Amino acid sequence: MKICLISYILIALICSIGYTEQIVKVDFIRLMNCIAQAETGHLPEHLRDRAVSPVGAIGRYQIMPFHAKNFGYKVKDLYKPKINKHMAYKIMAWELKKYKNIEQAVAAYNGGGRQARLAQKDRCNETRHYVAKVLRMYYKGHFSK
Image 1 (cartoon, rainbow, N blue to C red):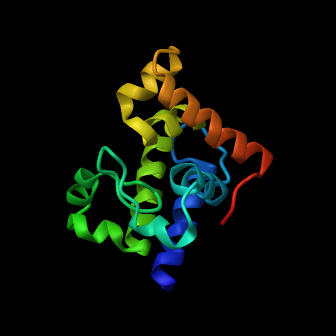
Image 2 (tube, rainbow, N blue to C red):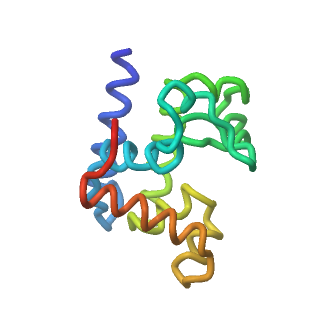
Image 3 (cartoon, one colour):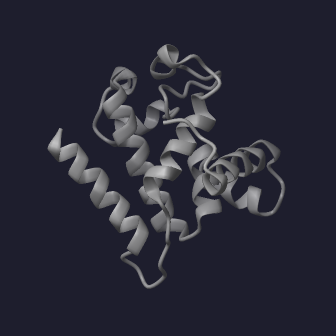
């Protein structure tokens, strides 16, 4: 448990101070709470960790199965809340590092890099709406933990 907490704090620090030339200032824990709310907040609490989307994304943070394999987990591990959260945090930390921009990072989390580019050009409606929803919660503080 201490290792998980330390890794989340480390990821939050990396995202808030940046370790590249350009700094990305993000309240990482708040952002991830907003993402969880956007992904599965419409479901009753007891169903969020078992949620599966029509495209196959799993759990509270809606992680795609290919990510499990990339991180050395089995797909069934995505149903475990701690692993789902850990992977979501790693994915978002990676996207923030890559894009150095909260809007593009959230778009990439939702639909991959191509969707981040399309959303930036106003071509991907679903991703654009998702980003707007997450950022509205993030900036106004409207989310549940």
